[in-house]
Amino acid sequence: MSAGFEKADTSSETDGTLAGADLQTALFDAVCDSLSAAFIIYDKNDHLIFASRQILEFFPLPSEMLKPGIRLRDFLGAIYDTGVRQQYIRQSGSLSREDWLSQKIASHWRERFESVERHGADSWVRFVKRRLPGGYGVTVVSDISEDKKREEQWRSDMERVQLTEDILDNLPFPLFVKDRNLTYVAVNLAFCEKYQRSADEVLGRKSGDLFSPEIAKRFEESDRHVLETGEMSISRQRQISRDGIERDIVSRKHRIGKPGRYFLVSTMQDLPRDGADLEEFDRASAITASTNQSYRRAYVPVPSAVERREPAAMEAIVPENFSGRKILVVTADLAAETAALRTLTKYGFESCSVRGEDEEERFLEIATSSGISLDLLIIDNQMGMRCLELSEQYGIPALVMDGFQIANELTFQIARHFNRNSRNSGGGADADWEISTSDDTAGLQVLVAEDNDINQIVFSQILEGLGYRHMIAATGDEVVRLWAEHRPGVVLMDISLPGFNGFEAARLIRQMEEAGGAARTPIIGVLTQAFERDRAECAKSGMDDVIMKPVSPDMLETIFQKFLTEGAAPVRANG
Image 1 (cartoon, rainbow, N blue to C red):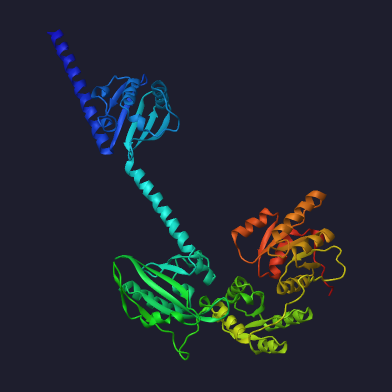
Image 2: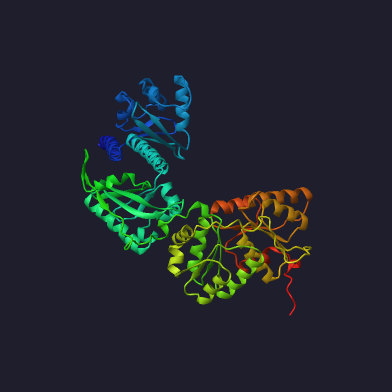
């Protein structure tokens, strides 16, 4: 009785174990289905414990190869025999069956291993293998064909985008793209060159951030009309080109894209001076049929001479033959001063600023005594009549503007001035001109490398006021020679010098120091714009620090306190 119970009890346990195993297998299969992946689990002796039926979707194996207890080696051999592995893309050459099996078994014994194999023309499979601390191993097989297709599509799209950008950048005329919010989302190189702006300065902004409010409003009204109606727009604007001649610019605007994702594409082109293509504008009201849609050309005529509005700064291009003209800006408005000097530098003018009538008078005195001729004064209308009287006293033309005009319309006003006056003044001062505070240059404290005549005056005036013995050289060759002769306490090195540029001059000085065992002279790079590439090149050429133009007494004093030795204190007058 007892034996029978025990036997029955044992039978019950065995049935329960089998039922539990079947349930466990069913659960694993359900998990594999939900994950769209196949699982293989094997023990430390490399015998299969579980292989999900999804394996058959990847390999045409006999179903008995999925039974628990099958050796992993036999399972992999069956995969090899199906011939699927012949379609894999392998890094190595052709492998024999035994070599292939050895390679696969080895990968299953690595703690972590992942690989991707290609099955056929458009099927990709990922294998993720893990060997647990207890010796059990798990392999997950998943189909990543869709991911690979998306990756290939993304790569193809990126190549097309790059090709499109290259094409747009090589177009000879300016082009820009705005989104439905009228924000710039693309500009080409011709656009950036025309308006003297980098792409980063334009992208993400609107017309109101780049043009005067009046111009921006006119542009955006036209932009919005094209976006809302789909009508192609042709308009004309009056601008000053690089050759100094006022001419008409034709702008064409199109709407592209789909509803909800429209973009505005605009191009600009100079009209021929003889007006040969004005015939196109006579037909501007005609409807031109297209295979996809129709466009109505909206022609906006040039305003009459009475009502014509002068364009803002971004509509003016300073002629190249004005490059090198010397201009002094007189304003106490720091924002206007900064914008004006940055703009003048971009267009190649030699420029400087003063902040009052006393500074202006002192500057003009020094310039006159040094034989330097200024071409133009820009005077803020808030500075008083004395500033204008000084320009008349020294015989220098002047333009009086408000702070907004100085910051936003400077290039246009200057171009108009030079165009109307047709100046033919001769060259400036001698390019090799040097300034020294005294005939005795022994114990020279500061050597300035600067070729701009106006900036030479600025440096000389500041250093003289601070009491430092200094010399100024106008070429890279000259600064190297003066350094070798006088061994100054510090060198202020402009990077754009004739002959050797500032980078080359700094490298030569460092080579001469190393060859002769001389003490290291601090070299400070003087930059016009804060480009990271210029900063990096300064450091690479051996410079110790950089400062930005325009320089000031406080800026130079800070540099001298940092780099000049205690024995190189300024020599100040008594009293």
